[in-house]
Image (cartoon, rainbow, N blue to C red; front, side, top):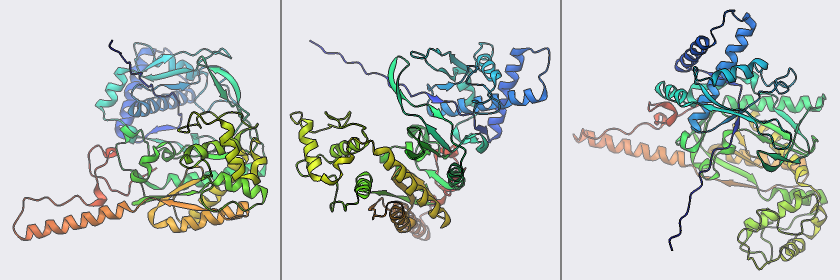
Length: 484
């Protein structure tokens, strides 16, 4: 009997429409003008819009076109979620000045066959089974964008439209989304306080510093789905409290595959070093209890040898849960033998980490994230004062290779200042950038020697500061990179 198998196509996850996208090249402006002319012909308006309304109309159209091109450059079949309801586009909720009720009219106009800019799937507002409205670029739209050579390199983001760098979310509740059960948190208003103002100012300064940094992605940005212009960070707090969560999200480096980060990101013409706090959640737990943690790897627990990854996930789940789990938390069993019951693993963890057992099942995880984020903010601000670009990933930072020791010292100092105990920082990476330069110099010297001997058939190697990158459309570009 022949068994047939089918391969399920994994569709790209819908992304929210980004109203901050703006054109920065002549080709991008040309494309917007073409669409605007086509839309005007289809509208056939007898009466012109008021000047203010026309300005909003053009801004909305520009943002839609820019983000549609950006989306299809990285995900040709990807959809964007858009707000079309009056409630979502009301004065207090709109994410950009041009996202008025007329924004919904514009989106629907662009989906008309006579315009053929986008495909529109109108959502269902049902509170339990509802789905969001989504759009994606039409085939004709993508074909014209390809003719003009448009990709993510042709667009930037307007800092004024990136939104508040702070966000407060409610406790997650169970809901039906697109027919599936999901735990969703609502966005809450931030309190008007000096504390919030201070944190907002910190994030604004950090975002401005990273926005002006020289960053490169050494690889195929389309295949890797990377946009080095995606740098704006948002600090997100959870459970309706500014003392829960607070991690930073949004940078392209956070969404890059971990296996590619160290070998693909270039900061200020340098390879990167990755520095992270070793077993930070457990060390924070011991700091809260006021007990010195065991020496060595805190996840190397007697009786669980060989299952460090699974042990780490289980320990962190125990610290995050609001009640003591009775079975393996979802996604934590991994390669542990099926014959092992959860009680066996839990008993081994509790014996090894007896001083902090009271914190298991106490929902301490979000409080630890708050401390962790405060440590990272201090680290980033201090490194910024030293002129060092650092890219944060929760309990980790990426810095140029030559700055790794300074960053390590600053991270350890920040950890001690916040928690009163010593943090352990691990450094990963290698200076592959200098290795490439040394090989480059050796190849160049060898070529010169051959030329002196009369061999003129060898071409000199391309200088390291003029590598060909996918961002450049095949042209030589300075390695110093894009300053967003």
